[in-house]
Image (cartoon, rainbow, N blue to C red; front, side, top):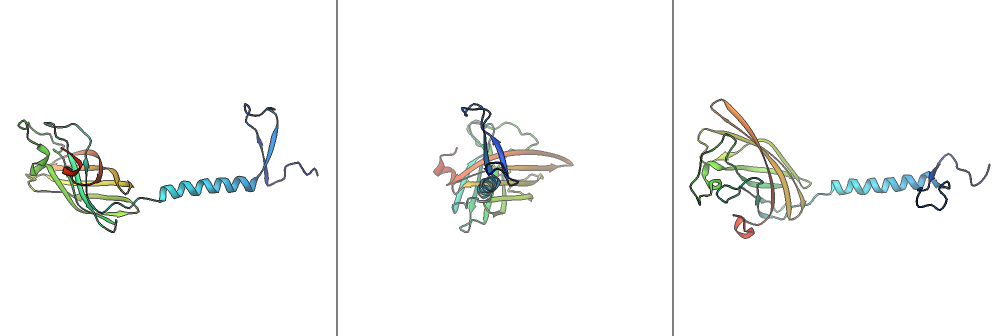
Length: 194
C-alpha cells in the first residue's frame, strides 16, 4: 500500500477551486485533526451561549418600545440583587390593551396609578430571567386583573432586554399585548429617561 494514499481515518478534501493553482489537486487531512477542530469550535460556541452576564447590583431602568403619548414613553424599572440571582420590584408601565381615552397635554399617562404594574420578585439563573403569568399589582386597577410573563437576559453586566406578555381581563373580556424593553443600571432621572 502506498504511504501517500488515504487511510480509513483520513478524509480527502478538494482544495477550493479558485484558490488552488491546480483545481484538480487534493490534500489529505487526518480525521483526528478535523474532529479536534470541530470539537474546539463547538466547545467555544457552547461556552458563549452558556456564559451569561451577572447584572450590576442596584437600580435599573429603561424604555419600553412603542409610541410616545404626550411626548412620554413607558418605562421599566427594577432592582438587581447583589448576588445577581433575583430582580425585585420589577415595574412596567402600560396603558393596557383594552384601549384608553385622551390625556391632557403635558400629562405623563404612564405614571398614573392605573398604568404602573409591579411584580415583586423575578428569579435570575445564569444571566437569564423568566416568570410566567405572574400577578402584576396595579395601585388603581379599577377592576382589571393583570398577569405578566416576563422573559429576558443580561447581555452584559450593564445591559438587558426582554419581553413582557401582558394579559388583562375585565368583565369577562380578555386581551393581550407584548411589550419589548431594554434596561441599564441607573434610575430614570440619572439616565435621562422622560
